[in-house]
Length: 240
Image (cartoon, rainbow, N blue to C red; front, side, top):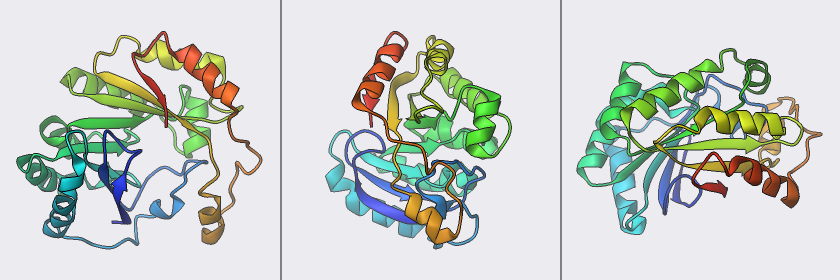
């Protein structure tokens, strides 16, 4: 495990305990937690220890809050998460996964089908070329296979989309995003995540070259335009 945020308000509904797990197969250009990418590192926790930490936060969750597993990519540890999520559900704690949707094995399916109340799926790009440019890996279809699996389950899903000027904010890409998902019934909302450079110092600390150093943050008008373009396709859009 990488770290724990005990009072998160941007990673799912309500107030949440956010568990950041270590390890990710992608290396997104804008990653603000690059120190979670390496598979090695992090701190080992037992299921019991994590359960106790989360349970202690339960009084703050209220009616909407709960626990969110993020990363890194939490589904890399889906097998270990199944028994933990089972205990959390028995305790009446709302569970969420923040995922890039690249892993859809037996354990990921069991985790989502039986014990995950909400999946927050990060859509990187709508084209194969764009996906590879952003993530360093091929096959953007993994995102769409994952989303279809969640849709077919009938269980709640949010989409998350990082809006980078000149890279992911082109009108044709936003319209393609909307057109692809417009018939989905399980999508409760789309979260637009404005581009920021809060993680650049972490890249520098790791000795890595941050390739988006010349990218700028979104203007208010650009964010409003994106929402306007996407409004016809989604029942709720928020800027996170």
